[in-house]
Amino acid sequence: MSQPQPPAVPPTYGPPPGYGQQPAYAPQPAYAPQPAYAPPPGYGQQPGYPTSPAPAYPAQNFGGQPATAPAYPAPAGYGGELPMVSCRFCGSVPAVSMTFRGHQGMIVMMRFLRMEGPFCRDCGLGTFRHMTSRTLVQGWYGYGSFIATPITVLVNLIKRGKVARLPAPQPNPFGPSRPPMNPGPRLLARPMTWLGLCIPIVVLGIFIAAIANSNG
Image (cartoon, rainbow, N blue to C red):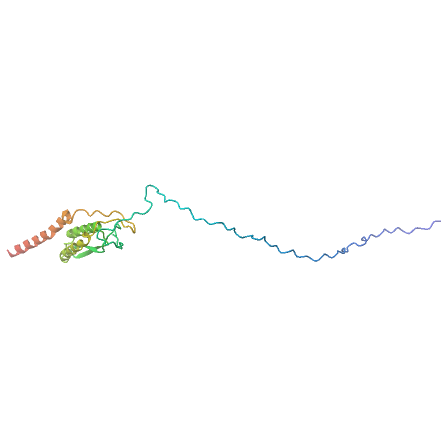
């Protein structure tokens, strides 16, 4: 008779030899530093270019304008000095600093007006004539104004000579200027002046007639 055989045992599997073990790496050679980079000679320097003077171009004349600013002659009698004062209205030279005054009577109250310079000859004469003729019409209405009006007119007449003796206004070569104002008719050629002169004569006539009637 045959002998009974033992049961077959399944084989056990294991990792292959050397599994899970890091291989032994050969040591690397020490790092050798790279040599420092040196720029080539003359790198980064600008080449020296020969300098040449800028060409001189002739002055251009656009639109028929002169290439240089025109030189204005000094006003006659100005003495050749630089004009330090210019007209406040037109900027012309020569000019003189002064103030023309006006007056308005309002029976109980009164109003004093003024127009400050500097003025050239034409603008000064125009201002004098305008303010004086208006004063002769508007300045008589009041007891105090009846005295202040002739004084204001007399002061303006005295100051008028300063602007009347100035030379003709000319453009200011040192600043902006424009044509001066038109002075207008002379003081005695204005209807407003004659109307203003008639007002005190009429008032005095009425006052004298009232006194004569009261005495008669």
